[in-house]
Length: 333
Figure 1 (cartoon, rainbow, N blue to C red):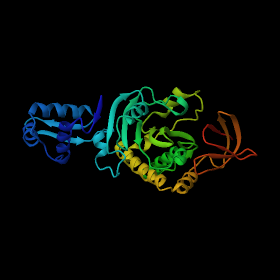
Figure 2 (figure 1 turned 120 degrees about the vertical axis):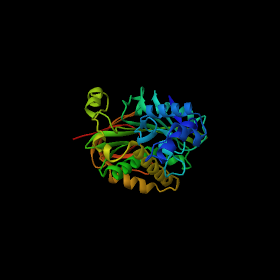
Figure 3 (figure 1 turned 45 degrees about the vertical axis):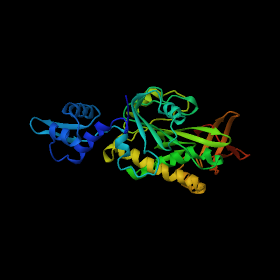
Figure 4 (figure 1 turned 90 degrees about the vertical axis):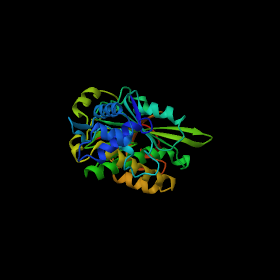
Protein backbone atom coordinates (compact mmCIF):
# COMPACT_ATOMS: atom_id res chain seq x y z
CA UNK A 1 0.00 0.00 0.00
CA UNK A 2 1.25 3.49 -0.87
CA UNK A 3 0.34 6.65 1.03
CA UNK A 4 0.83 10.32 0.25
CA UNK A 5 -0.61 13.51 1.71
CA UNK A 6 -2.67 14.28 -1.38
CA UNK A 7 -4.28 10.84 -1.65
CA UNK A 8 -5.76 10.67 1.86
CA UNK A 9 -7.51 13.99 2.61
CA UNK A 10 -10.38 12.48 4.64
CA UNK A 11 -8.12 10.36 6.82
CA UNK A 12 -5.77 13.31 7.45
CA UNK A 13 -8.72 15.57 8.40
CA UNK A 14 -9.94 13.06 11.01
CA UNK A 15 -6.41 12.46 12.31
CA UNK A 16 -5.61 16.19 12.54
CA UNK A 17 -8.82 16.82 14.50
CA UNK A 18 -7.99 13.97 16.89
CA UNK A 19 -4.48 15.38 17.39
CA UNK A 20 -5.68 18.91 18.14
CA UNK A 21 -8.34 17.63 20.58
CA UNK A 22 -6.41 14.78 22.23
CA UNK A 23 -7.43 15.81 25.76
CA UNK A 24 -11.10 15.10 25.09
CA UNK A 25 -13.31 12.45 23.58
CA UNK A 26 -14.90 13.22 20.20
CA UNK A 27 -18.06 11.40 19.19
CA UNK A 28 -18.52 10.02 15.70
CA UNK A 29 -21.36 12.53 15.26
CA UNK A 30 -19.11 15.45 16.33
CA UNK A 31 -16.48 14.43 13.80
CA UNK A 32 -19.13 13.91 11.15
CA UNK A 33 -20.66 17.36 11.73
CA UNK A 34 -17.39 19.31 11.94
CA UNK A 35 -15.64 17.58 9.06
CA UNK A 36 -18.79 17.27 6.93
CA UNK A 37 -18.36 13.57 6.21
CA UNK A 38 -20.64 10.63 7.05
CA UNK A 39 -20.36 8.71 10.31
CA UNK A 40 -19.53 5.60 8.29
CA UNK A 41 -16.61 7.49 6.68
CA UNK A 42 -15.47 8.60 10.16
CA UNK A 43 -15.51 5.00 11.39
CA UNK A 44 -13.56 3.79 8.33
CA UNK A 45 -10.94 6.48 8.75
CA UNK A 46 -10.53 5.71 12.47
CA UNK A 47 -10.15 2.02 11.66
CA UNK A 48 -7.41 2.83 9.12
CA UNK A 49 -5.72 5.25 11.57
CA UNK A 50 -5.47 2.41 14.10
CA UNK A 51 -4.07 0.08 11.42
CA UNK A 52 -1.35 2.65 10.71
CA UNK A 53 -0.06 2.37 14.26
CA UNK A 54 -1.84 5.20 16.07
CA UNK A 55 -3.40 4.28 19.42
CA UNK A 56 -7.00 5.50 19.53
CA UNK A 57 -9.12 4.94 22.63
CA UNK A 58 -12.81 4.34 22.00
CA UNK A 59 -15.44 4.58 24.75
CA UNK A 60 -19.12 3.94 24.10
CA UNK A 61 -21.28 7.09 24.32
CA UNK A 62 -18.16 9.27 24.71
CA UNK A 63 -16.31 8.76 21.44
CA UNK A 64 -12.71 8.62 20.30
CA UNK A 65 -9.46 10.01 21.72
CA UNK A 66 -5.95 9.83 20.29
CA UNK A 67 -3.67 8.29 22.95
CA UNK A 68 -0.35 8.00 21.12
CA UNK A 69 1.23 8.68 17.76
CA UNK A 70 2.46 6.15 15.22
CA UNK A 71 6.11 5.18 14.82
CA UNK A 72 5.67 4.76 11.07
CA UNK A 73 7.27 7.28 8.72
CA UNK A 74 4.00 8.35 7.13
CA UNK A 75 4.09 11.32 4.70
CA UNK A 76 1.87 13.64 6.76
CA UNK A 77 4.00 12.95 9.84
CA UNK A 78 7.19 13.83 7.92
CA UNK A 79 5.79 17.04 6.39
CA UNK A 80 4.17 18.32 9.61
CA UNK A 81 6.57 20.77 11.25
CA UNK A 82 9.38 20.03 8.76
CA UNK A 83 11.66 23.07 8.59
CA UNK A 84 12.98 22.81 5.04
CA UNK A 85 12.37 24.86 1.91
CA UNK A 86 12.06 21.94 -0.51
CA UNK A 87 13.36 18.61 0.72
CA UNK A 88 10.63 16.38 2.15
CA UNK A 89 7.70 18.69 1.36
CA UNK A 90 6.34 15.89 -0.83
CA UNK A 91 6.61 12.33 0.44
CA UNK A 92 5.40 8.82 -0.44
CA UNK A 93 5.28 5.88 1.96
CA UNK A 94 5.16 2.18 1.02
CA UNK A 95 4.41 -0.65 3.45
CA UNK A 96 6.71 -2.87 1.39
CA UNK A 97 8.64 -2.20 -1.78
CA UNK A 98 11.43 -3.82 -3.76
CA UNK A 99 13.65 -0.75 -3.39
CA UNK A 100 12.98 2.92 -2.60
CA UNK A 101 15.90 3.73 -4.92
CA UNK A 102 14.32 1.96 -7.91
CA UNK A 103 10.97 3.63 -7.18
CA UNK A 104 12.52 7.08 -6.77
CA UNK A 105 14.54 6.73 -9.99
CA UNK A 106 11.36 5.86 -11.85
CA UNK A 107 9.49 8.78 -10.25
CA UNK A 108 12.36 11.19 -11.01
CA UNK A 109 11.52 10.99 -14.71
CA UNK A 110 7.81 11.61 -14.03
CA UNK A 111 7.81 14.14 -11.16
CA UNK A 112 9.64 17.41 -11.70
CA UNK A 113 9.40 18.60 -8.07
CA UNK A 114 12.62 18.96 -6.09
CA UNK A 115 13.17 17.13 -2.78
CA UNK A 116 10.54 14.37 -3.14
CA UNK A 117 11.06 11.62 -0.54
CA UNK A 118 10.21 7.92 -0.99
CA UNK A 119 10.06 5.87 2.24
CA UNK A 120 9.44 2.17 2.88
CA UNK A 121 8.62 0.24 6.02
CA UNK A 122 10.63 -2.61 4.53
CA UNK A 123 12.41 -3.40 1.27
CA UNK A 124 12.48 -6.82 -0.34
CA UNK A 125 15.34 -5.97 -2.71
CA UNK A 126 17.28 -3.18 -1.04
CA UNK A 127 20.31 -1.96 -2.96
CA UNK A 128 23.80 -1.10 -1.79
CA UNK A 129 26.80 0.20 -3.70
CA UNK A 130 28.09 -1.83 -6.63
CA UNK A 131 24.80 -3.67 -7.04
CA UNK A 132 25.10 -5.42 -3.67
CA UNK A 133 22.02 -6.37 -1.71
CA UNK A 134 21.11 -4.30 1.36
CA UNK A 135 19.20 -6.10 4.11
CA UNK A 136 16.19 -3.90 4.93
CA UNK A 137 13.94 -5.38 7.63
CA UNK A 138 11.20 -3.52 9.48
CA UNK A 139 12.58 -1.20 12.12
CA UNK A 140 15.17 0.40 9.87
CA UNK A 141 14.83 3.69 8.02
CA UNK A 142 14.88 3.11 4.28
CA UNK A 143 14.37 6.14 2.08
CA UNK A 144 15.38 7.87 -1.15
CA UNK A 145 15.33 11.57 -2.02
CA UNK A 146 14.94 13.02 -5.53
CA UNK A 147 17.09 16.14 -5.88
CA UNK A 148 17.54 18.60 -8.72
CA UNK A 149 20.85 20.33 -7.92
CA UNK A 150 22.20 23.61 -9.17
CA UNK A 151 25.82 22.81 -8.29
CA UNK A 152 28.38 22.13 -10.99
CA UNK A 153 28.88 18.60 -12.23
CA UNK A 154 32.52 18.80 -11.05
CA UNK A 155 31.44 18.51 -7.38
CA UNK A 156 28.79 15.83 -7.95
CA UNK A 157 31.26 13.14 -6.87
CA UNK A 158 31.50 14.83 -3.44
CA UNK A 159 27.74 14.61 -2.89
CA UNK A 160 27.66 11.06 -1.37
CA UNK A 161 30.17 12.16 1.26
CA UNK A 162 28.21 15.36 1.90
CA UNK A 163 25.08 13.25 2.45
CA UNK A 164 26.89 10.95 4.89
CA UNK A 165 28.11 14.05 6.74
CA UNK A 166 24.49 15.28 7.04
CA UNK A 167 23.62 11.91 8.57
CA UNK A 168 26.51 12.15 11.04
CA UNK A 169 25.39 15.68 12.04
CA UNK A 170 21.88 14.29 12.65
CA UNK A 171 23.09 11.45 14.88
CA UNK A 172 25.29 13.82 16.86
CA UNK A 173 22.40 16.21 17.51
CA UNK A 174 19.79 13.54 18.22
CA UNK A 175 21.76 11.09 20.34
CA UNK A 176 24.88 12.98 21.51
CA UNK A 177 27.10 10.28 20.01
CA UNK A 178 30.18 10.45 17.79
CA UNK A 179 29.68 8.44 14.60
CA UNK A 180 32.63 8.03 12.26
CA UNK A 181 32.70 8.33 8.48
CA UNK A 182 34.31 5.65 6.38
CA UNK A 183 35.21 6.60 2.82
CA UNK A 184 33.35 7.00 0.58
CA UNK A 185 29.92 7.13 2.26
CA UNK A 186 29.45 4.79 5.22
CA UNK A 187 28.53 5.91 8.74
CA UNK A 188 29.90 3.73 11.51
CA UNK A 189 29.67 3.28 15.28
CA UNK A 190 32.63 1.65 17.02
CA UNK A 191 33.87 0.39 13.65
CA UNK A 192 30.59 -1.19 12.57
CA UNK A 193 28.26 0.06 9.83
CA UNK A 194 25.13 1.83 11.09
CA UNK A 195 24.13 3.54 7.84
CA UNK A 196 25.00 3.68 4.17
CA UNK A 197 24.49 6.05 1.27
CA UNK A 198 23.80 5.24 -2.39
CA UNK A 199 23.67 7.84 -5.16
CA UNK A 200 22.36 7.53 -8.72
CA UNK A 201 22.70 10.53 -11.03
CA UNK A 202 21.02 11.34 -14.31
CA UNK A 203 23.11 13.54 -16.58
CA UNK A 204 22.09 15.41 -19.71
CA UNK A 205 24.43 17.49 -21.90
CA UNK A 206 27.11 17.57 -19.16
CA UNK A 207 24.51 18.92 -16.69
CA UNK A 208 22.95 17.15 -13.70
CA UNK A 209 19.28 16.50 -14.44
CA UNK A 210 18.64 14.82 -11.09
CA UNK A 211 20.33 12.98 -8.25
CA UNK A 212 18.57 10.19 -6.39
CA UNK A 213 20.00 9.73 -2.91
CA UNK A 214 19.36 6.40 -1.20
CA UNK A 215 19.76 6.16 2.57
CA UNK A 216 19.68 3.04 4.73
CA UNK A 217 19.82 3.44 8.51
CA UNK A 218 19.83 0.61 11.07
CA UNK A 219 17.55 2.56 13.38
CA UNK A 220 15.74 -0.14 15.35
CA UNK A 221 17.00 -3.44 13.96
CA UNK A 222 18.50 -6.56 15.52
CA UNK A 223 22.23 -6.12 14.79
CA UNK A 224 23.20 -9.67 15.83
CA UNK A 225 20.56 -11.18 13.58
CA UNK A 226 21.69 -9.04 10.64
CA UNK A 227 25.33 -9.95 11.26
CA UNK A 228 24.47 -13.65 11.07
CA UNK A 229 22.60 -13.01 7.83
CA UNK A 230 25.35 -10.92 6.22
CA UNK A 231 28.49 -12.62 7.54
CA UNK A 232 30.67 -13.74 4.66
CA UNK A 233 29.33 -11.22 2.16
CA UNK A 234 31.92 -9.06 0.31
CA UNK A 235 33.33 -6.08 2.23
CA UNK A 236 31.33 -6.96 5.38
CA UNK A 237 32.69 -5.38 8.55
CA UNK A 238 29.87 -5.66 11.07
CA UNK A 239 26.45 -4.16 11.82
CA UNK A 240 25.64 -1.43 14.32
CA UNK A 241 22.18 -0.21 15.33
CA UNK A 242 20.67 2.88 16.95
CA UNK A 243 18.23 0.65 18.85
CA UNK A 244 19.40 1.65 22.35
CA UNK A 245 18.95 5.34 21.51
CA UNK A 246 15.47 5.08 19.97
CA UNK A 247 13.59 6.13 23.12
CA UNK A 248 15.23 9.56 23.06
CA UNK A 249 13.74 10.50 19.71
CA UNK A 250 11.07 9.14 17.35
CA UNK A 251 11.98 7.87 13.87
CA UNK A 252 9.81 10.65 12.40
CA UNK A 253 11.76 13.37 14.23
CA UNK A 254 15.05 11.72 13.27
CA UNK A 255 14.11 11.73 9.56
CA UNK A 256 12.93 15.35 9.77
CA UNK A 257 16.24 16.41 11.32
CA UNK A 258 18.18 14.48 8.68
CA UNK A 259 16.25 16.15 5.84
CA UNK A 260 16.93 19.55 7.42
CA UNK A 261 20.67 18.81 7.73
CA UNK A 262 20.74 17.44 4.17
CA UNK A 263 19.21 20.63 2.80
CA UNK A 264 21.80 22.75 4.62
CA UNK A 265 24.69 20.73 3.19
CA UNK A 266 23.03 20.70 -0.25
CA UNK A 267 23.10 24.51 -0.08
CA UNK A 268 26.81 24.39 0.82
CA UNK A 269 27.43 22.56 -2.45
CA UNK A 270 25.28 25.04 -4.36
CA UNK A 271 27.20 27.92 -2.78
CA UNK A 272 30.54 26.19 -3.47
CA UNK A 273 31.44 25.82 0.20
CA UNK A 274 33.23 22.62 -0.71
CA UNK A 275 36.16 23.08 1.67
CA UNK A 276 33.71 23.36 4.57
CA UNK A 277 32.32 19.92 3.68
CA UNK A 278 35.73 18.26 3.28
CA UNK A 279 36.94 19.79 6.55
CA UNK A 280 33.92 18.59 8.56
CA UNK A 281 34.01 15.17 6.90
CA UNK A 282 37.74 14.75 7.63
CA UNK A 283 37.17 15.62 11.32
CA UNK A 284 34.89 12.58 11.61
CA UNK A 285 36.73 10.23 9.26
CA UNK A 286 38.04 6.83 10.36
CA UNK A 287 39.71 6.48 6.96
CA UNK A 288 42.06 9.48 6.90
CA UNK A 289 45.35 8.46 8.49
CA UNK A 290 44.57 4.74 8.30
CA UNK A 291 46.42 2.12 6.28
CA UNK A 292 43.99 0.93 3.64
CA UNK A 293 43.57 -1.43 0.73
CA UNK A 294 41.42 -0.25 -2.14
CA UNK A 295 40.00 -2.46 -4.85
CA UNK A 296 39.35 -0.48 -8.04
CA UNK A 297 38.63 -1.36 -11.66
CA UNK A 298 42.34 -0.93 -12.34
CA UNK A 299 43.41 -3.25 -9.52
CA UNK A 300 44.38 -3.05 -5.84
CA UNK A 301 46.05 -0.07 -4.18
CA UNK A 302 47.61 -0.26 -0.71
CA UNK A 303 48.90 2.64 1.35
CA UNK A 304 48.08 5.30 3.90
CA UNK A 305 44.95 7.43 3.33
CA UNK A 306 46.23 11.01 3.34
CA UNK A 307 43.26 13.26 2.57
CA UNK A 308 40.21 13.80 0.41
CA UNK A 309 40.26 16.31 -2.42
CA UNK A 310 37.47 18.75 -3.21
CA UNK A 311 35.86 16.30 -5.65
CA UNK A 312 35.69 13.56 -3.00
CA UNK A 313 38.69 11.63 -4.31
CA UNK A 314 40.73 9.78 -1.68
CA UNK A 315 44.48 10.40 -1.93
CA UNK A 316 46.58 7.32 -1.06
CA UNK A 317 50.26 7.41 -0.19
CA UNK A 318 51.35 4.38 -2.21
CA UNK A 319 54.66 6.07 -3.18
CA UNK A 320 52.80 7.80 -6.05
CA UNK A 321 50.04 9.59 -4.10
CA UNK A 322 47.25 8.03 -6.14
CA UNK A 323 43.82 9.66 -6.31
CA UNK A 324 40.84 7.28 -6.17
CA UNK A 325 37.27 8.39 -6.89
CA UNK A 326 35.58 4.99 -6.55
CA UNK A 327 36.41 1.64 -5.07
CA UNK A 328 35.92 -0.81 -2.22
CA UNK A 329 38.02 -0.03 0.82
CA UNK A 330 39.33 -2.15 3.69
CA UNK A 331 41.04 -0.62 6.72
CA UNK A 332 44.20 -2.55 7.49
CA UNK A 333 45.62 -3.17 11.00
